[in-house]
Amino acid sequence: QVQFVESGGGSVQPGGSLRLSCAVSGSSLYISAMGWYRQSPGNQWELVAGMLLSGEITKYGDSVKGRFTISRGDAKNTVYLQMNNLQPEDSDVYYCKAEAGAATTYWGQGTQVTVSP
Image 1: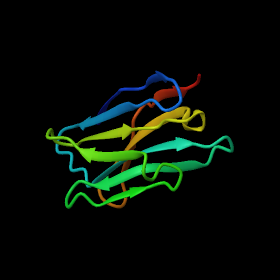
Image 2: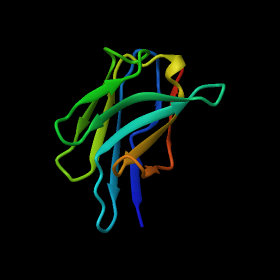
Image 3: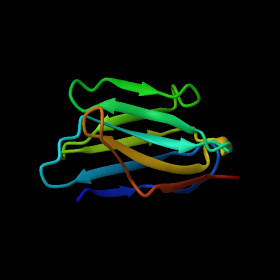
């Protein structure tokens, strides 16, 4: 059984910062990539940031480039998302995604981020 521990969401004013964390655990679990996604108003999944856990190759959505940074934690299967200069349009539920190779994907329960004056 795969377990997610997501944390760090909350409410901030525009220009503020939050740091999300996601840790995935499970017996005999090999995770190759992790990332954060959110859903647009049209329910389209939007990549916020993702990374390969080996080599630390990262990818960002266009709307967050230069503001958000994904990094790997020291603990196994742990990633962080540092979000700076948050704007109201960043308000959403952020979901952690973990990939165990190309065919298996796991999703966390999501954490709410709200940006408002």
